[in-house]
Length: 301
Length: 301
Image: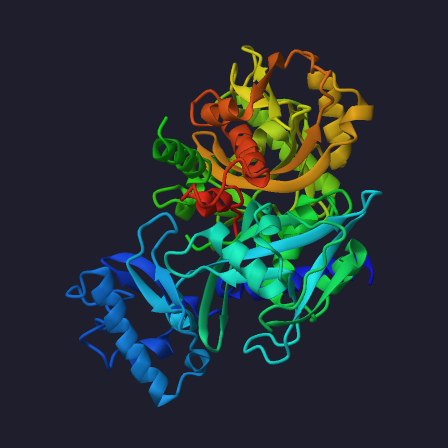
């Protein structure tokens, strides 16, 4: 692929993953989702209509915001009241995203540094545009000659989301109350059979942040990215069945794959960030270098 | 300094360097600066009033924009016409920023990947909120035991801007038509007497982007950041007199200095990015980790 066609494919990926910021998105029609007057998400209009049926939990839209009722004044009360609504909606079966119910509790807060105000079922977060956090690991090896190769996973064909697509060697969402490094070590073990003694050597390098909208709602996400140099003789193995295979690929091949539709999009972003940090993409030869970096770090004001 | 006080100082730095995005900034009152209907900057209202005196060069504000007259239809004509206006304004002596005239031509374009539409004197770019690009080098050493120390420069007390403050080991603005790595090698040589054979080993790692307003106008900047591991026995030396001294400091000391007012602010941002990429700041112990990363990569839509 010619250089400029490759760059254009990467820009397309970044635009798609940040389409909530683009003209024509649902953003101007969304309601701020507020708890105690602090914004913690975005509620699309079609979701707001559904929530209106539960006035004991959600206030009617007012001043551009949908709020939790002030009587829900503790972490526990908020979490339970919203969960009860979501369980009802799930049983009604009208919302596709709730079919992917996972029984995983995610923290709801306006900033990562703030104390969580409630937890919410993972599958429901996009209905409220609640920001989700996760961990993604760039697994790679360095040959004796200094050549870098990257380990990629191919997702199981039976995965609920993005079946059969390429993924980072391990990755996972951050559940309420669980540490970042702890999540990393757990996911490395479960998904790729990377023992803790190796996984603990991963080092944090950045976050990759983006917000996109799909039919299911608004996906605002920040991924804590880690680099993990794996011993040359080590091979990740399929663990919990979320992955069907692992490949060790030269950087040129990885770069080529980034511009195809074979990658889970947010994993492609984490890999793009790796390629930039490790100077496999250089600003004198990649005119879109700065646009790439910007596209990897979009956040809502 | 307690951890949370340090984090708050860093957040303050990032807010100040991105104050153009904050409520209360001049942004809603600025005019888009357009060439051929493409936005290339932001003109504050007080500057727009001054430009109104040159209707043969600037169209009167219309639809929220100040534009170059369409008759200025080449790179050369635009550059010369605007330069003539700026020379007049400079002689009138009313604009502080033009007292810092440098005879350095900066490219004007809507994106770095677009062909430049004109050049503009560096000192004038803030009057038009034209985005400026530069190169900043993180110079560091690694001891035999693996301990990282960072080389910092202290700016000359006679520098026009930020005299006497701490700076990266070398840095410089990107002049029209000059390459990024070329600028890096030149600045390393001139400012820190780092020979080309060493400077060329610097590798690109990211961009750091921000937009702030001051009395002089709007400063929209993106810095191409490079890491340069210097040989242990090598010492940067004062070159062209822009620097008064160099220090080799342990990372803990650098981190402490970041939260003082002793750093040129954009250099502090480049160092903060270095500390994050090299895992000297970790997300499990720094609650504002993601906010830090976001604050280093703000760009105008």
